[in-house]
Amino acid sequence: MAESAKRVLILGAYGFIGAEVVRALRAAGIHVTGLGRSAAQAARVLPGVSFVQGDLLRLLRPEDWAPLLQDADAVVNCAGVLQDMAPGELEMVHHTAIAALGAACVERGIAVVQISAAGAGPDAGTEFMRSKGRGDAALRAAGAPLRILKPGLVIGQNAYGGTGLLRMLAAVPLVQPVALADAPVQCIGMADLAAAVAAALQENLPQGTYDLVEDQPHTLAEVLAETRAWLGFAPARRLLRLPDWLLPPVARYADAFGRLGWRSPLRTTAMAEIQSGVCGDPAPYRAAMGQGIAPLKAIYQPLPSGRAQRLEARLALLMPVAVAVLCLFWLASGLIGLWQLEEAATVLTDSGWGSLPAKASVAFWSLADIALGLAILWRPWAARACLGMAAVSLIYLAAATAVTPHMWADPLGPLVKVLPGLLLALITHQLLQER
Image (cartoon, one colour):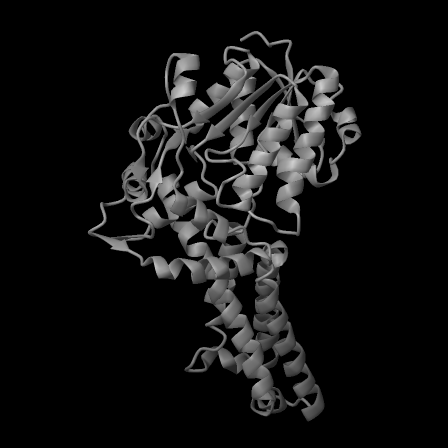
């Protein structure tokens, strides 16, 4: 296909939505440049795509945007965060930076396609939706050529956030656990979302605001059942409805881990959004384009599904368990070593070590175990902590083989039992890799 003369800057280019929009626009012959915080991650997700580094937390004035917009004819905003990881992050990413973008674009006559969210507005129930609504309003007030697209639950080949949670829950064997089973949900396939962005850029979609949702809502339980069927898992023998009172404590724990860098789809905002329903009005988009958004069954139908997707869903379900097991194992190992310092040191003194160096060695490695058990809880360090666990396990095995080789024949198998922990650390390291 011949390349279009239009040059488009994509914010959040390597994210769940952004990456698919970039690929679709390139396939349509549109020249695309991505923007995001990490050039390395962009190169992994979108090899060969032009990319500039930029952080919305630092692009808060119109003049901050000027160098990034020099070669752009249009901007597509696919960036967003579900919940504050730092004070004021939602406001800056969804409103302040976008208001500055709108002002910079109107000065240069640059069109904007804003990917917002169905239900975003000043009276929404969560700060996520309210801050998105403030960003939408700021763009309208700026006066640049504008299309605001407000998708429902986005379903694509890849999974992240709510879609990832659906697949994790669908991977539970025998039963189908679900909270808020009757919550209404309207979906959109990634292909339809990318097509709407392309139509907006090509000016086939008039300026305005459009909910991108299928015509009929489904219950969350129905969406889960459809996801389970698409993945190829056996139908659940029983729908396990989790009580509503369980949600607040689960969300609070998820929020606490969010402060440690874990972006769980079970955080308070996500739960509140599901509880209020993911719904919109499909009529304006249908009237503008002459056709609506594909329904849920049609969304899943063209998406390839097989062993790889089932394995990914199962591993996503197991990853939090693996992290918890490693954390508890290494903390317990270190604490027990300190608690029973005398007994642990006798293994070395019986091999000819002095009492002081034996105790010092046990204390040092016990503290190393505790440090690794805590480090895996901090998301930015978690993958490296797994490698540290693997390295320390190998050191244990090598040192024990050299100093106390008889322990390999111990009937309780203290050295043999290190091997499964070593393997779990290496597997978890792979599970923790960024999307």
